[in-house]
Structure formats: C-alpha cells, structure tokens
Length: 312
Ligand SMILES: C[S@@+](CC[C@H](N)C(=O)[O-])C[C@H]1O[C@@H](n2cnc3c(N)ncnc32)[C@H](O)[C@@H]1O
Image (cartoon, rainbow, N blue to C red; front, side, top):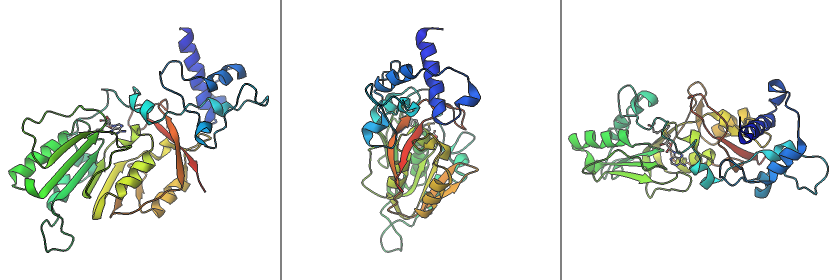
C-alpha cells in the first residue's frame, strides 16, 4: 500500500467519524496534526478544491494553525462545489445506467409505473379547452443517453402527434444516442441541472436516478416544481439519506415533513419524490456542498451526499 493510499484510508475513516460511526469501525489512533493539516489543504488526490463549509458561512467549524488548542474533527470534511463535483469520477463515469428505454425491462415506463407517452397523449392540446396547452411537454432531467425521449419522439411521430408535443432532455454528459434526423419536438441539451432552466412549463418532469449525483438536490427539486403546468407532475428518485446536516446526520424526518409541507409526496419504500401542479416551493435549508465519497447508495452505485444547514 502506498503512503497516499494509507493517507486516503485514514482520511476516509475520519470522514466516517463525522457521522459518529468511527468508534464502531476502528481503533485508528487520532492524529490531530494530520487532520489539522488536511483541513487546510486542497484534497491531495482528487484534484478538487476542497471547500470548507466555514468558508461558506455554514455551521461547520474550521480552525487555523493558530487557533485554540482544540481541533474540530469536522473541519476535515471536504465539501465540493458544483464544478469540482461535476468533474468527479462518481458523477462523470461510464458505469452508470444511462440507457433506459421508453418501455420494456430497462425502461422509464417500468421505473415510473406509468408510460410518459400516456401522460403526454392525455393532455388536451389546442385552444379553447380548459387546461389546454400549445403542446404537451415532457422534461427529463439527467436524461442519460436520451434514449427514452428519442423513442418517444418516434412513437409520437408515428401517431401524428409531433407538433402537439415537446420533449426535452438535459444531461451533464454529452453521451446522447445519435438521432439521424432530429425531430423538431425533441431537444437534447448538454448542461448541468444545477443551473439550466427551461423557457416553458411541462406536463411531466422526470429525473430517474439523476439526483444521486447532483449537489444541491433540494434546489433542483424546488426549481423543477416551478416548471410544471398547473396539473403537471414531477417524479424523481431521491434517497433522503443522502441529504445531510453539518454534523453528518441525515436530515431525516424533519426534512420529510418540510418536503410534505412544501407540496411534495415522498414514497420511502421506492425512494421516490413527486409533486403535482406548479408551485413556488421553498425549503428552509442552505446548501453547503457535496461529498463524492459517500460510497454506494441503494442502487449499488457510488453516490453523492449533499450537505445543508438547517435554517430553522
Ligand atoms: C444513472 S444515470 C440515469 C440516466 C437516465 N435518467 C436513465 O434512467 O437512464 C444518471 C445521469 O445523471 C447525469 N447527471 C449527473 N449530474 C448531473 C447534473 N448536475 N446535471 C445533469 N445531469 C447530471 C449523469 O450524466 C447521468 O447521465
């Protein structure tokens, strides 16, 4: 094992200690000088700039070499900002499933329990009808290859509904399946959901297994809720245990209650969040940064923990 590996391992264990789990896992001797140094260095192996929550006005405490004698272990938690997170191998890798189809075994229809096409075709389109829109829209955030949207566009073309529908996919990685003759109702956009925003509202917004890799997950959810039509539906996979407080604990039931109060429903069995109807959702949390070393989540893939200060 190289020094770097050993160093990394110790850092990892200290990070686990933030969540209060260290004592059960190891009797690693504490080395205050080590982690004090680490707290002030950019992470030596990731190439990322470590963001110390104290720099961002959070409840996480940092300390200086000249600080009081007590060193806060939590200072060694390194939170990543958006740019560093989006360059992380956990987020930009080829191991994740980006290829869900519209229907079939590995599909949106299977994951969602309904067909996005059924939603789109049920929307009254055209002037003079209650709730009518010029075109029914499906926005897929973190769409991967965009395969499901491309297949939907083809089915809508065959049904003569291209002009009555709008399909938009957004993904950080430009790994979209090729579309030889892109239909006018389909747009695949390479952008981060952290700062992209649409110019229209949507009847359906999906984000399947995308939030696991996003830093400010709560902002994506609240922003997306504002992009719905009055009866539109937002459905996203969300592992609530990935939303952490500065001391490393999951935000837990208080967050669940606040999400409900803001108009979201959460299915804890399926780890699925949803909301119906456009809303100006606000949650009393301030985003601090992301941890790309959280390890595998329930999907088996390494995922990202998102840290928030609770503004109560
Ligand atoms: C597990 S894949 C799921 C893809 C697709 N939803 C599916 O179910 O097939 C997660 C996707 O999220 C994308 N992603 C991660 N962070 C993102 C971000 N900040 N903005 C946009 N897409 C992001 C990844 O590039 C990846 O394509």
